[in-house]
Length: 122
Image 1 (spheres, one colour):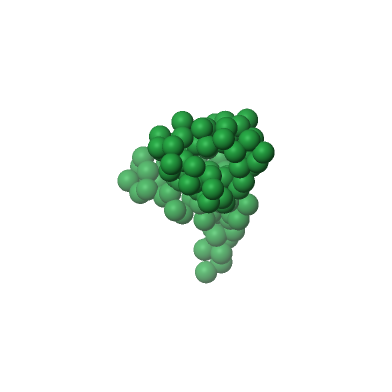
Image 2: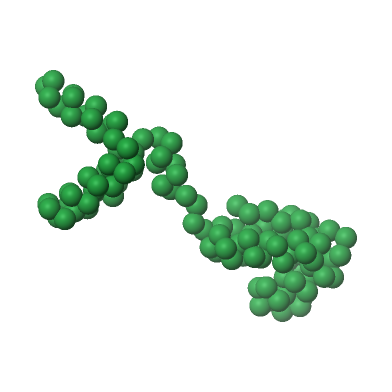
Protein backbone atom coordinates (compact mmCIF):
# COMPACT_ATOMS: atom_id res chain seq x y z
CA UNK A 1 0.00 0.00 0.00
CA UNK A 2 2.86 2.39 0.76
CA UNK A 3 4.15 2.05 -2.80
CA UNK A 4 0.81 3.17 -4.27
CA UNK A 5 0.64 6.13 -1.91
CA UNK A 6 4.18 7.15 -2.91
CA UNK A 7 3.27 6.71 -6.59
CA UNK A 8 0.14 8.87 -6.13
CA UNK A 9 2.22 11.56 -4.46
CA UNK A 10 4.67 11.52 -7.38
CA UNK A 11 1.79 11.91 -9.85
CA UNK A 12 0.31 14.84 -7.97
CA UNK A 13 3.66 16.63 -7.89
CA UNK A 14 4.38 16.33 -11.63
CA UNK A 15 4.97 19.53 -13.57
CA UNK A 16 2.94 20.30 -16.68
CA UNK A 17 5.92 19.33 -18.85
CA UNK A 18 6.24 16.00 -17.05
CA UNK A 19 2.50 15.34 -17.41
CA UNK A 20 2.78 15.95 -21.16
CA UNK A 21 5.76 13.58 -21.38
CA UNK A 22 3.83 10.94 -19.43
CA UNK A 23 0.84 11.35 -21.75
CA UNK A 24 3.10 10.86 -24.78
CA UNK A 25 4.64 7.71 -23.31
CA UNK A 26 1.21 6.26 -22.43
CA UNK A 27 -0.07 6.98 -25.93
CA UNK A 28 2.97 5.87 -27.94
CA UNK A 29 4.04 2.83 -25.95
CA UNK A 30 0.75 1.55 -24.54
CA UNK A 31 -1.93 2.95 -26.88
CA UNK A 32 -3.70 4.75 -24.01
CA UNK A 33 -5.27 8.18 -24.61
CA UNK A 34 -4.69 9.86 -21.23
CA UNK A 35 -6.32 13.25 -21.99
CA UNK A 36 -8.73 13.25 -19.05
CA UNK A 37 -6.15 11.84 -16.65
CA UNK A 38 -3.61 14.50 -17.62
CA UNK A 39 -6.02 17.29 -16.69
CA UNK A 40 -6.75 15.69 -13.32
CA UNK A 41 -3.07 15.10 -12.56
CA UNK A 42 -2.15 18.64 -13.59
CA UNK A 43 -3.96 20.00 -10.55
CA UNK A 44 -6.55 22.66 -9.88
CA UNK A 45 -5.04 25.88 -11.23
CA UNK A 46 -3.48 24.31 -14.27
CA UNK A 47 -6.67 22.37 -15.07
CA UNK A 48 -8.56 25.64 -15.27
CA UNK A 49 -6.01 26.99 -17.74
CA UNK A 50 -6.37 23.83 -19.84
CA UNK A 51 -10.10 24.49 -20.11
CA UNK A 52 -9.76 27.98 -21.60
CA UNK A 53 -12.95 29.30 -23.12
CA UNK A 54 -13.04 28.80 -26.89
CA UNK A 55 -16.54 30.01 -27.79
CA UNK A 56 -17.87 33.43 -27.00
CA UNK A 57 -21.17 35.27 -27.18
CA UNK A 58 -21.12 38.91 -28.25
CA UNK A 59 -23.75 40.78 -26.22
CA UNK A 60 -24.93 44.26 -27.17
CA UNK A 61 -25.55 45.92 -23.79
CA UNK A 62 -26.76 49.29 -25.14
CA UNK A 63 -26.72 51.19 -28.39
CA UNK A 64 -25.20 54.35 -26.97
CA UNK A 65 -25.65 57.82 -28.42
CA UNK A 66 -25.25 56.84 -32.08
CA UNK A 67 -28.04 54.28 -32.44
CA UNK A 68 -28.23 54.53 -36.25
CA UNK A 69 -24.51 53.76 -36.61
CA UNK A 70 -24.90 50.75 -34.31
CA UNK A 71 -27.89 49.45 -36.33
CA UNK A 72 -25.80 49.76 -39.51
CA UNK A 73 -22.86 47.98 -37.87
CA UNK A 74 -25.08 45.14 -36.61
CA UNK A 75 -26.61 44.80 -40.09
CA UNK A 76 -23.18 44.58 -41.75
CA UNK A 77 -21.59 42.30 -39.16
CA UNK A 78 -24.45 39.80 -38.87
CA UNK A 79 -25.98 39.81 -42.34
CA UNK A 80 -29.38 40.65 -40.87
CA UNK A 81 -31.87 42.80 -42.70
CA UNK A 82 -32.36 46.42 -41.65
CA UNK A 83 -35.54 45.70 -39.67
CA UNK A 84 -34.01 42.69 -37.89
CA UNK A 85 -30.86 44.69 -37.03
CA UNK A 86 -32.98 47.57 -35.69
CA UNK A 87 -35.11 45.15 -33.64
CA UNK A 88 -31.96 43.60 -32.18
CA UNK A 89 -30.56 47.01 -31.22
CA UNK A 90 -33.92 48.11 -29.79
CA UNK A 91 -34.09 44.93 -27.70
CA UNK A 92 -30.83 45.46 -25.83
CA UNK A 93 -29.33 43.70 -24.04
CA UNK A 94 -29.26 41.20 -26.90
CA UNK A 95 -26.91 38.56 -28.26
CA UNK A 96 -25.39 39.72 -31.54
CA UNK A 97 -23.57 36.44 -32.25
CA UNK A 98 -23.14 33.22 -30.28
CA UNK A 99 -20.50 30.50 -30.35
CA UNK A 100 -17.83 32.52 -32.14
CA UNK A 101 -14.06 32.31 -31.74
CA UNK A 102 -12.18 34.71 -29.49
CA UNK A 103 -10.68 36.60 -32.46
CA UNK A 104 -14.04 36.99 -34.19
CA UNK A 105 -15.72 38.05 -30.92
CA UNK A 106 -13.06 40.69 -30.27
CA UNK A 107 -13.38 41.97 -33.85
CA UNK A 108 -17.15 42.27 -33.52
CA UNK A 109 -16.78 44.00 -30.17
CA UNK A 110 -14.28 46.49 -31.56
CA UNK A 111 -16.46 47.29 -34.61
CA UNK A 112 -19.58 47.78 -32.48
CA UNK A 113 -17.75 49.93 -29.95
CA UNK A 114 -16.38 52.10 -32.76
CA UNK A 115 -20.00 52.64 -33.82
CA UNK A 116 -20.78 53.80 -30.27
CA UNK A 117 -22.26 50.66 -28.69
CA UNK A 118 -21.55 49.15 -25.29
CA UNK A 119 -20.57 45.49 -25.83
CA UNK A 120 -19.74 42.56 -23.55
CA UNK A 121 -18.17 39.19 -24.34
CA UNK A 122 -19.41 36.14 -22.46
